[in-house]
Image (tube, rainbow, N blue to C red; front, top):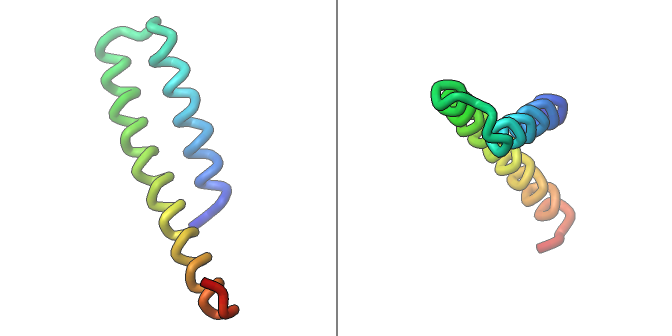
Amino acid sequence: MSVNNFEKDLSRLEEIVTLLESGKCTLAEAMTLFEEGIGLSKECNKSLEEAKSKLTVLSAENGEN
């Protein structure tokens, strides 16, 4: 997992949400942005799950629950 990629993906996702909320996109543009947003959301979630797993392992190694 790369923190830079996560930050970049999250930033782009925020841009997409702003664009979609503005209501200035055509339907075709909105659909394309929505599709990109879903992909980015999945990538961000994957990165967060990987980080959570690493934290769980590190906590277990240090005797924390």
